[in-house]
Length: 437
Picture 1 (cartoon, rainbow, N blue to C red):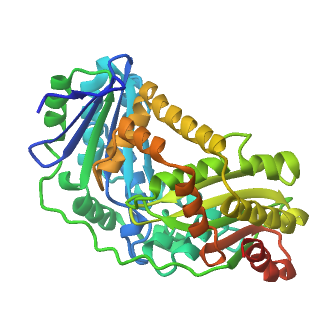
Picture 2: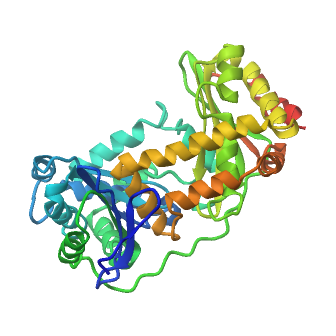
């Protein structure tokens, strides 16, 4: 159980389980001087109903109000900072993470702090935290309390009538209604050993980590746990457009395409397709929209990826009178990528940069925790070397085939936030569809 396997790239990897069923991933990087400690729970808006939407996020906030050993938020954060780190937490649709990176000599104390945070919260001062959460939610609402967050608006159209289409923070009325019993109940149901993965990455001695983790996290309940039932994700049919009015000088546009999830065989080809679009200033999106046409200062693409579904998002922020021109340019660019032959040299650059990005994880224990720890909730992740090998195997036809399947009008959902006339709204989706037909 103490043994780790040294990989080709020089880090050592080991997977095991503690006595209570908590999965432990250890990624030893002996050349570093810091260590990342991260614990991941399978909780988030994907596993919530409209009635309790936002409760996972609310719980994440409440854990920072104090623990048995650090009864106030100030004492908790001071303890972390005296160890040379800063507590970090985030809630996503399908995972909640708590992480701290600190000097290696403080590893045991860091594990104890992380365990205190997720096993002994006091759930005090809920009204103070409620006000903070309300302020966070209000950032994504307009003066009439209508949503203007493009991430939420796009997901709601991509996956309608499904929890994946919900907001992570939930609606304002839920945040105002949740009480301590709601938060504590959610904690007791979900913060159990069999619903979690603990990852330790960086410079450490393997036996030292195992003993410290076993001692610190023995308090995490060993009760049985089963994942929530999630229905098949429906797809919003395109081309379609949703608009949210927001005064200002620019409009945000998102062109979102349904794409395969992380469990699909085409996931590596999908990552290469994304890299062809947006991986540096010489790639297609920046070259066309920014350099050649001068239609926007901000343009980019990313993947909103889950086990079973994902979306390839293209985001542009532009002046209101450029909305039509930007939309036509994006549609034309994607049609070219889909229909014209991809040059091997272009794909070769994308593959090389992707592998170099993986190699950069060797200098970042937090990136290693994210890679090996978060994925372990749902599957045994590729090693970095395995993923690099899969990248090298992708060829032009793999990417071209995926582009032909993805960049179709029926896969497209457009979201705009800003000032777009009703006349433009009525024709925008059709204009992009015409370019993709």
